[in-house]
Length: 581
Image (cartoon, rainbow, N blue to C red; front, side, top):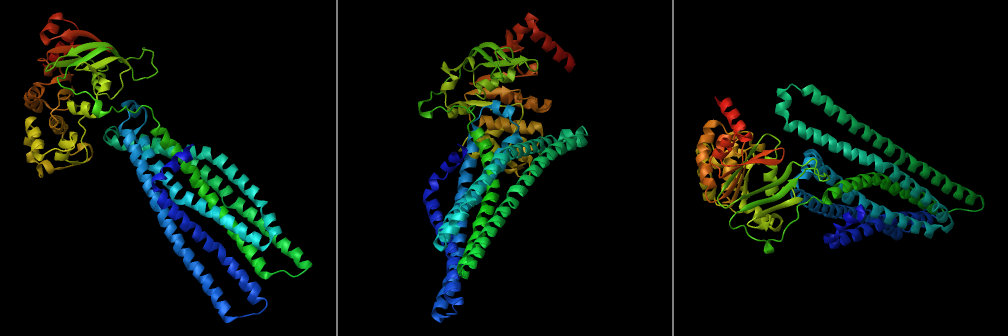
């Protein structure tokens, strides 16, 4: 159950929670005792006109003292409960973020980035309200209701018994509200997630939106999603407007009429105590105020539960990459790679008809360069994704040094296999931090040597702040070629045993490409390299070239052998040569 999973997060804070709960009980007790003192004043001093100075000072001082104590304790419990709530949400967000980092890429293929961000931020913020405002308020008001009924029974058992009839009506109201609101809140959270997803996508693709003059179209699409969120919000407002205040006020009016009628009929047969009447009306008012508060908090409670369902749905995702114990993990020593009858589909439920790789078999021996070429969609990048274990191998087997890929720990695999992706992604920070990203501890000397190795230091030193040059989101202030060179340096600073180059020169201009071909040659020396290439001129010196077509290896050999075969590779090469001429 969702609520119990949330409450388990309170376990590390049990001592602080106990202290805050005791303070809450004391504050509630001080609040309940106030009308008792007023009742004593009415019935023992005001009505009989007995104005004993010392007794009045004690009553007045006691009442004032209770108000001060109640205010102080309320402040303290509020701060304590909020502090506990913030710590719980802090841990919950860390757990979600940590889990998301270990999810397989198939999850990110299906769930939009904005939807994930919404779950980590908006949904956890909604859960925070459960701990900050809901649980403490529910406990406080529940204790207050018990205290009020105890006080009522101490004043008049019959009338207090009559007032108990109100409880089933209150519980029915709460049940009806919960039943109806759950569906509305689920829709509300879903539409908010869609809103964030559309916003995230539009901002990231703003260059294309403006270049294609699609501002009007995207505004209309965003407006449609925004309207759906608006309609869900209106449904929520209507529900709260009906249940939260008017329905409770109707019950309060009914209860007030009941109390006044009781005392009215009693006055026909004898005198009534004005202090008891005051206390009952005061307690009745205090009884429905917590009910109103609980109904308002119930709205937050429902939103928190729906948000928690979405968060735990993400935490329970079974597509997380299984971690391997680093202590028992083998080491990558030579870097020999072997694909044995590997087939793969991005659709986990596929029966083989939608495979993007079909029976892939090849061996890359230590120090060799194996190049993968083929038309777009032939499966080249999927080979790299499987080798990097971004997706699990479901059919066939991938071996490194004769050991199954699944046996290696993340630390061993990612430290010995260096990836340079087609999209040169940089993080906000500076150039030095982006180059040092692949290792926890990297010396400034190593960063500079890696940059010099890939010939990136020349343009870096021309920047105003050199290696400390600030980088904006995704490195937008640098050219694509400069970003790719930094990614080369990032890979080489880790000194990997295996290199995976996924069209690594695709974003580099011709002049820069010529400059880094020498660096690539040095990078490949002594390392097993899997090079995915679109431009065939960059992989002519590869030890083995694999030509992929529709997910299958249709040709294999060296550059010269494949040209002599006059097959698909020959056709691709001649087409590129003709395009260059």
